[in-house]
Length: 544
Image 1 (cartoon, rainbow, N blue to C red):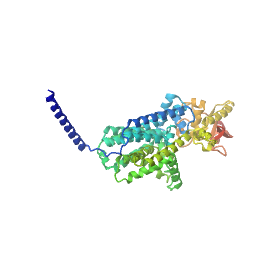
Image 2 (cartoon, rainbow, N blue to C red):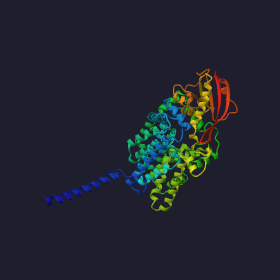
Image 3 (cartoon, one colour):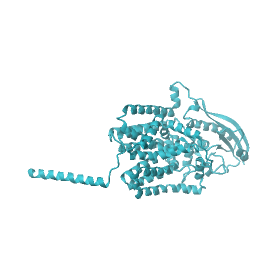
């Protein structure tokens, strides 16, 4: 029996191998493989993946511990958007609603404190790193994914986004998720991936209007890589657009109900209300600023990789895709500086794909140029690591080296001494309350109003139904406070006007609204024995 079965099994095995080979050949002809993105010397080595996971978890724990320690206070925007979170709406004056919803969830979990407001910032940073670790491990190598995670962690701009909860971390997260899904959609001809890409693009728009640039990124890739254009004959991209368009509906409804206030804000914020004028100073300030906050060493490598990607005779679709995903945002704002000043954080969504391009470009060249690339990598990690440490603990670092850091040079100045300002204003309010009338507060700026609301206990307790701090009245929308009840119903009451803009005399609107206005002069707001800001306080009696 064995004599008969062995030849039969042998023949059956050969026939199976031949049939399998034929099937593979037919599949290869029907679906030719995409050109390899880059060489993968690291492969999918699980050791590098494990190192990446450990690194992400350790950094997440360190960042959460830093926030829990309360080393820094809220920025003006964080406090302002915390007030938003107490007024749920379809959208807000200057931003989509996702930041308010995120803060609402964070404070629901941990309470109305600094940690609750910022809880999701390091969590979002960890999610971004996890997504990119897996993405590059699959498309390039696990080693490339690991080093991208490390490089992003010592990039100052990304470090800020992992600490402060503004709209940028949310924007970068959803931009990254949508970019990964749209690459898979093109690579695998996957309708499902297009649907996910549209969903994340919609959440990106719900976080920051810059998400619409992703449509330009898709269009650019279709132009520079002809093989991807077959997707335009598929339903996937159009369904993705329809899914993303659903997220514009709440924002459009809110704006329709509020006189298109956001459109007016964006029009003036972008400088379109001013005559065209080329300004080299804005351009140079932007270039210098981005060179610094993107890590001076790695910025050079990023530009090198981007240029080399285009100059290469054999175009690499994966590198072109990463370029298309990041470069349009960066280049647009770079050039827009000639017209109007651009804030450094506006290019945030471009950072992750451009750094991924840099790592993916240099990964296959590591063995050939190990000595030079290793020196460059170490220099970048040292420079970036020191910058991140100084950003988080500048006073302690200065003390270690024997230098007393002036308040004017402290990078944390904008997140320091707000509680002291609120304490000082609260003390003046108690003095005025002794006259027997209720006393409310007016901040000259939405940031001042928001900080007083958060850090003054009696003001915090009154949110949202019984506000104690208000923004100045304006005829047209100037901030979100415009759309909420003002202090006009507090007739006969007294107020304190708190301003960080030093006034030579009482503002006109105060003189018109109150029977008398008295300047209490300048008050120094100190921290660790140094003056961090100065506020001027006016006593306003008897609202007419």
